[in-house]
Amino acid sequence: MTVKRDIKESWRPATRLVHGGQLRSQYKETSETIFMTSGYVYQSAEEAEAAFDNSQPRFVYSRFGNPTVSMFEERLALLEGAEVARATSSGMAAVFAALASLVKAGDRVVASDALFGSCQYILGEILPKWGVETVFVDGRDLAQWRAAFAKPTKAVFLETPSNPSLRLVDIAEVTKLAHAAGATVVVDNVFATPLLQQPLKQGADVVVYSATKHIDGQGRSLGGAILGSRKFVEETLQPFLRHTGPSLSPMNAWILLKGLETLELRVNKQAATAKALAERLQSHPKLSQVLYPTLDSHPQVELARRQMAGGGTVVAFSLKDGKEAAFRFLNALQLVLISNNLGDSKSLATHPATTTHQRLSPELKQQQGIDAGLIRLSVGLEDGEDLLDDLLLALAVA
Image (cartoon, rainbow, N blue to C red):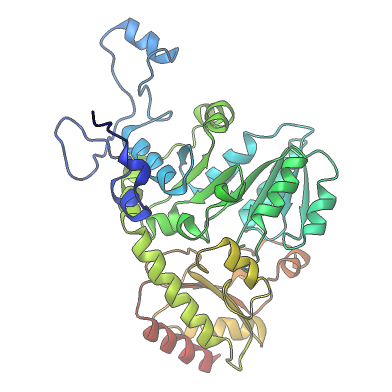
């Protein structure tokens, strides 16, 4: 007798990105269906009761779950290697929900200090108002992590590579230390994407994404995702999401599903171009530094090569003459667009000190490596030589 196995378990990433989570209606459509509905109907009052006491699980309200959103969640979980995923309305909704569902007054959180500005605000402003202590450490320094974990800790939050200075955190080592202190480790994996780094396989407990970035990757849709164990999602996260409502629109979920289909093609091309540009720019006389995780000159290149399958799609570099030179450079670009987004099919550049990280104090900017001349370049799908020409012409003006 032939035993039929679930072949989804053996699918490689490219196949999972196209077919994972498919849920066809009775019409057997090729493309995923957009279920634009807020609610669902029942054949009887008894069926409604069974749905709400969860003895007969089904969709009851699109704030709690929706077929199109569920397809996106399952496909992303298959790619990440997570038991369960839950989608949110944006990346910051994912970060906030993951942390807020874990902590209460009196708890303690340890975080790396190199963070996106809004993440810094949640950890440094919102959680302390709730009576949660937040301790920031230099994420590159394991000694600082060890010292911070001398006290019991409820949660850990880190970005690696960080936004915008591309600093790395040793996920495996920090996770070991965190678990010994009783902490749940939450990793923002946006810059690496699930294709180039999988924190759960390195010991982390929870992974968060802004799906707005590479997953959509075409500047169309906001979205976020939280991935982890079934126990964490169903017992800790789901009640928070259910009652606070940061749900993803079915339309946005459909757009993100379409984005996943081409994620591998886009990220591999963008990362290859980003590395080539970093290599070509690193000797430019007007630049004081060029940062890219797998570049030989990156101070953490060995860690990058150990825990990442590639350096990602973002390059950072600093102009020697500071803000004025950085602005002249940005204003001289003709192909690369000025935008605070990243992970897009179009190349985008921004000046973090005056945009994404503007509200950080001068001390925090210095601490995170955000100098006045720093540019964050998100590399798109254009021809690499055309991008290089544009950058070099703009640097000549700067």
